[in-house]
Amino acid sequence: MRIGNGYDVHRLVKGRKLYLGGVEIEHPYGLDGHSDADVAVHALMDALLGAAALGDIGKHFPPGDKRFKNADSCRLLGEVVDLLTRHGYTIGNIDIVIVAEQPKLAEHIPAMRENIAKSCRTDIGRVSVKATTEEGLGLAGEGIGAHCVCILEENRG
Figure (cartoon, rainbow, N blue to C red):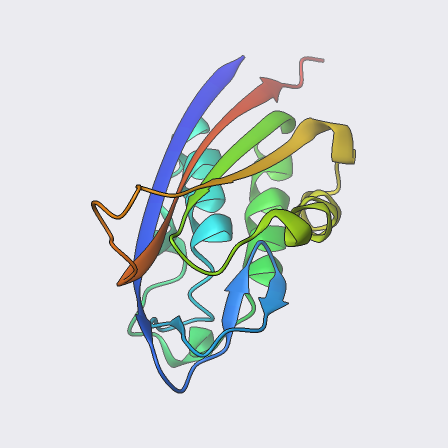
């Protein structure tokens, strides 16, 4: 078993769509970034890559690379899962916490879990997504962050 930890945060800005867990969420602000800036999926990719000791998302999808401009993070997640498969790993479980003052996310969590499970080619029962606020502290509505912990299992044989 291998454990990975990931974290990502992006600033909220006007003129961008908001994507979290592969779900487009109606909101007047979106996350600023080179790709679609989906912090939940970015934290997950970093956790998976870290568990396998394969670097981070910046190594595999450099922010200055035009191929990844406005890229769908769930598509990139699929590429990470392909890499893990080639290295002999399968996903044991995923636990993501999204930190946001706004918007409220509870109604979107089932769709996030579905998108992530599909992108990871794993059972939805292995994917947990939760949302919390910082009670007006920390990001204080200026951005959204996400933490992720995952377990990878080494395929033997």
